Image (cartoon, rainbow, N blue to C red):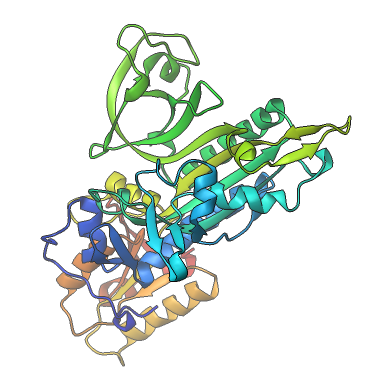
Length: 417
């Protein structure tokens, strides 16, 4: 991608209406644009980051047998009335349609997926399985804040699993926990991610959140120091923590420290809460009717994008982990015109890396100063900046700078990987 062809532009000015670092930097760098409070549009660079997160999620969902679906974003009032959530779900967007019909913009999809599955599950032989989607969700947040971390429209992965017994659900639940651990590791967030015990649903003592430690996090969590000494990252949500009485569910210890975190994902054992509402039964091996046991597993795709900014950005701009970055290399030729050998050599490097499957952003704006181009590179946050100049070409080298560490080294062009 040639940088000059991007229709979005960078800005050096702090966004006056940005309420968070992620909203400010992503807007200034041209990754997102604000539509209204709590609602953002994603520009080409932002879409590439979202797609990279989605790719990791899809691979890990596939590894545990998840089957991808795409459920409707709009649902009828009757489905929500069956579960008692039409009036009880405060964040539900309710819409009026033709002929006195009423609808909901879905913030979650239990009311859609449960009656859908009812059409296909009849016997214990049809169980277990899990289906997931990556879908835009809507929540009527009274006060949208923190940029992508708490919006009214957001992108989410939600997985729903269906089982013939509690024991079967428990085994699958553990598989999903393993998949989530791999997702956060591959996203560069492993050392900041804590499996956090929160208040349970209708079926279990606890639900689980995946909290990412952030100074700007909106949640208070209590990290188990005993678990940390054993190499485990375990925490308790503030809502169920009682000082001096709450014990770590893993170690039994009482030693905790308070931290700030941001929730990136949560998982629940739903039990028969929704299968009862929709009469979702199966015939067991004795030919007797039983209620299907369910689990649900959410992960905020756009929320993870915002969390990555809050976790890694510095005073100069964005800093992307390599697995998530929109491009691997940001190439800057210090040429006076596009016909000279510096520019042509930079193009050669660009074409070579692209042919090898490496994503590259090529700064062809040679009419701008080197300083402004370097500042844009820091703002955009691409992992490696390659500078090609008369000086570097004397030894057939490029200057490679790591955006994360700031380390600079001279690398021979033929050894670039």
